[in-house]
Length: 493
Image (tube, rainbow, N blue to C red; front, side, top):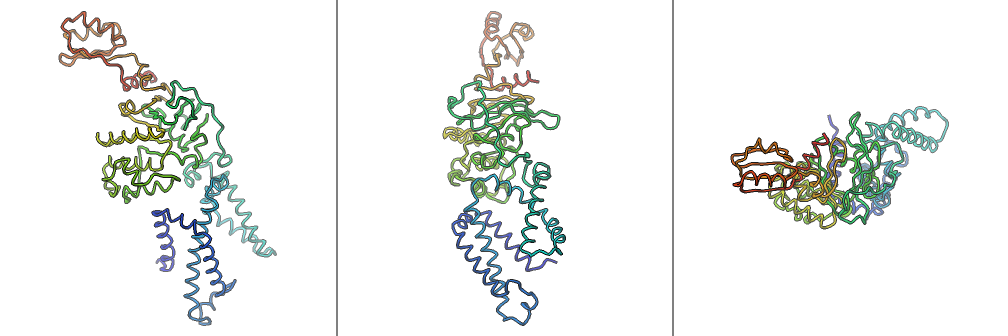
């Protein structure tokens, strides 16, 4: 049966932690008052020591030999001391240890392993030193030193870069010093002039990157940059390497060969990811939170986020602001996910199939917001299967197939790679006859309407007019981005 005192003690701590997670701004108050909280903690600890001494004897203390008021006063002082020590130490940590530090990051990453594995090491050392004739002031630091040495070595060589480290830290780390930056990369020569005119350093870059999953090569010597203020559409069939490229930029994967850069540095360190926003295709948000609360929670992770009401206005989700996430439709959930992706005022935004599930009106509103973000200088990486979306929004298009970059340039430049044109007309000419003409790729008829795909449109049109004097409703269209995409990926296959 659960013990009621333990239920109250641990339940209270759990409840306070839950409330703090929903009101992260309280951490700022602890940071401001760390000295006061520690002073109160020291005073309450002194009260406890005054009541029971440095080495309390439990049985006489709780017997009849002490005044009746000792126990409630000691209990209250002890409990309050625990809380004020908690507030004070967290506040002091925020005050003095909140700046980026390779050592602090490494110790923070290792702390979960140290917590899980320390007991058997400590117990073994206590047994070994139990009968050794040394003062406790020597035994205690010796046990701490040996325990920390053993645990940190085991973490570095047996945990950090293994599946255990991935379970504890979220990903495997390479066996090198924490925070070690990747080598600086030369700027790859673009196939087209970037929107910034080439005067600024890319906000993200892959340089001759290769990444494999076992024997499968997901990316093969790919070089790609994201320039400031541009929307780069990354297109490709399933399995082309799009998700792998984004995962490398997000620091979720590491390249087998080549270099990855985010904001001019390594994407492996969280500090370098504080200026990005992410909207992945598969997203799970807390079902019980309302849209406003989702935005508040996500914004609390960023150093300089947008105001919640500003995000709601920008993404036009006022009608969803107080609606629980679990009760929303698929399209409404995508709108909230988009709001959480931009609330941190990102300089670089990753959008993975952002308009899946949206109706036409919601999609147009999201496009408006995307264009507004671009106008404010935000860079965006967009992956989509709606090629008209890339055609409407993209400054540059990168086409991946079988892990290779097969085309890169503006929408017009990528379309120009494909020379075919679409011809439509009303004519009585037999389709089988047209198929024999030079420059014709395909020809079909739907009642009196003929549709022709041709590489030499002018030659085909002249022959149509010469063959059928009654030809009417003639239309000629250049290849769309979808035509170019289909042609390029078919050639790559």
